[in-house]
Length: 171
Image (spheres, helix red, strand yellow):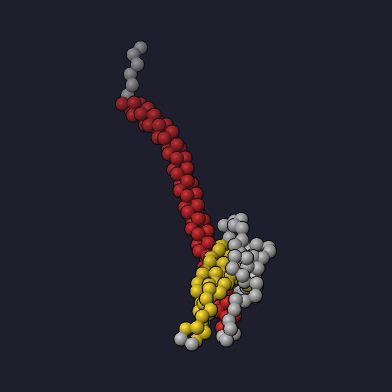
C-alpha cells in the first residue's frame, strides 16, 4: 500500500490549519485592543477630572480676590466716613489684626472672610491742606481659621483659596 493524497485533501488540510492559526491570533489581538482602549479611556478621564479641578480652583481664587477687594473697599469707606480726621477702623492694627469681614449673606462668597490690617503712615499738611496716608493689607481666604485673625487660614485641602491685596490710601 501506497498512500496517495489527492489535491483536494491537501487543500482541506491547509485551510483547516490556517483557520486554527487565525483563531489563535484574533483572541490575543482583541484582548490587546481592549486593554489599550481601556487605558486610553482611563487617561482621558484622568485628564478631564484634573481639568475640572483646575477650573474649580480658578473660580475659588477669583472669589478670594473678590473678597479681598471688598475688604479694601470697606476700609476706603470707613476712612472716608470721617474726612476731617480719618483713622484706621477699630481692631485693624497692622501685624495683629483681630478684625475680619464675613460675607455670609452673599451667594458666592458665603464661606470667605477678609482680614483687614491698617496703619497710618503719614499725617501732614500739604500747602495748608491736611493729608493722611494709610497702608492697608487685606487677606481673604476660605475656609478660614476659627478664631481671629481668620485669614490666612490653614490650607487643609484643594478647596483652600487665599488672595491678598495691599495698597496705599490717602485723603
